[in-house]
Length: 230
Image (cartoon, rainbow, N blue to C red; front, top):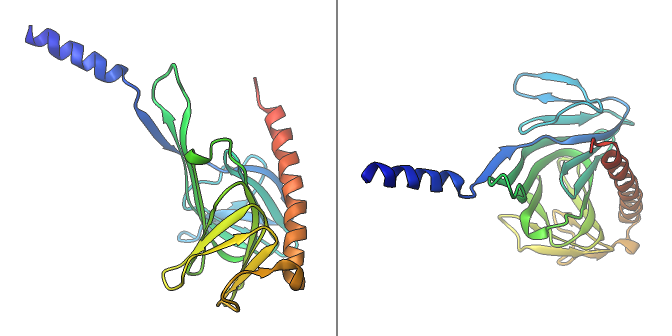
């Protein structure tokens, strides 16, 4: 009787739905100019192509005049601008282990902008299951909703501009800031609160470039989805 109970319990345990977490890779939508990725620790880099798989701990570098468009996790796209560098800290999805369900429960993307500029379009179908963050110097940027924003850093100053939605910016030494569409903030903080992008020429360029990048990313995402096998 005891053996039967053990067997039944084992079957029940195996049949229960368990979350399966696995690392994933960024999808390359398009590449312009010289862009490389690899390990800074081993100084081992190779050119980024449409077939490249960019994983956790990989660093991506774009040369002058170059750029790359990426899908990081479902609903989170990014354009790395000219003369820029990011390090992918984490790309991960959690799926329902029940084969009859197969649904995605959680998606995580974390990266660090070491220099240059990145534009991010965040519009997941399930906001509660998507976690996204970019670190730049001592700042951490997280979406507050569907949003479009840019982060630029030169190692001394960091400017964050929101073109759509809202984003939250936090650090260990400063009060968290929420930046709404049409506003920007620069660190070290030049103002106690976000400034209207219309009042700053560089921020206006950020908004314009972000809107153009978003249109391109959405078009690339649609074409990539149509190319996928049924």
